[in-house]
Length: 127
Image (tube, rainbow, N blue to C red):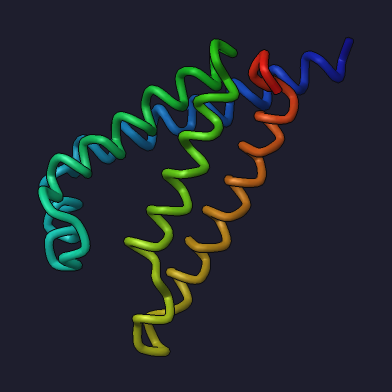
């Protein structure tokens, strides 16, 4: 009983964090779009930034309320890995600027692991 409660609470906290991340990123849409534009990796960076924010908010909501939690978890894994590559490619930074990007890369990898556990605990019906 306690285990189920803790698993549910963990899922809610994890999902809710991404809702907050998405809202905060929406508030910084212009700045983040500018960063993406400088990278020059994707066309229409503002649209892609809004897609990413949408994945954060909707994916976080799906995980938090346990409705298609597996889908939200997979979407957020993809988002985290792609965001790590786009924004935190630590190997592209001079040695003095690498540490926060290495930390972000590790954090995104760890959060991906948490979402893998959500996927394992709340798998799709066909899995």
